[in-house]
Image 1 (cartoon, helix red, strand yellow):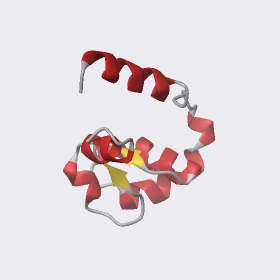
Image 2 (image 1 turned 45 degrees about the vertical axis):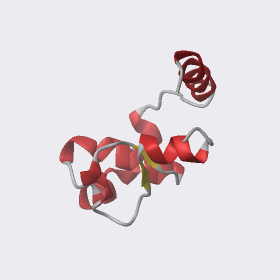
Image 3 (image 1 turned 60 degrees about the vertical axis):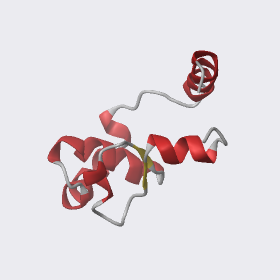
Image 4 (image 1 turned 90 degrees about the vertical axis):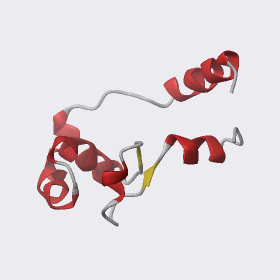
Length: 83
């Protein structure tokens, strides 16, 4: 992927990325604690649960659960037809 293509992809992604406050997902923290393979990622899992969405991460450990789908960068690029 060229630098130009990467810049375009990142620009497109920025249209869909936002900041979430704890109040938006705090009711899912307890469940996330029981799901997340890494305690440092509990907030990420709680937010994913609250939004009913997947996580984008290259951390293979996060795939050691079957509640929240985790996609790697390689998988995302494949979905976008860039691989």
